[in-house]
Length: 134
Image 1 (cartoon, rainbow, N blue to C red):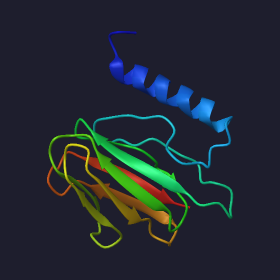
Image 2 (image 1 turned 180 degrees about the vertical axis):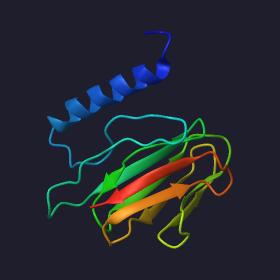
Image 3 (image 1 turned 45 degrees about the vertical axis):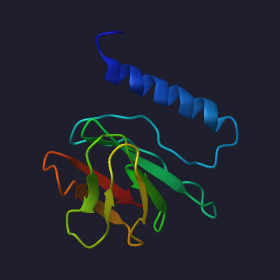
């Protein structure tokens, strides 16, 4: 197990999600994690009528967080890298969130139109993810 710390992170994140889901979690957070582009983990949309708060974490030049969100969901971006990054929709119109390094955070609103929204870091061309609104 010591040979693959990313696999261990996925297992720990999944265990935490399972533990929190039994404690009346509001659906916040994400399920699973992966790092390195292209990357993202999935999170199911909450039941209708509930608010949704999700986080995309940037770490080791990769995105970790929800792939699927509800229309208009509030999404927090947390940057655990020392360098500044962005979460910029490939079309440049749907969303564009710049976040300072060293633990900086910023929030944006997911598009209201269902669809698939590929995104990237404007500063680092190797960083990619996709946000699905449904």
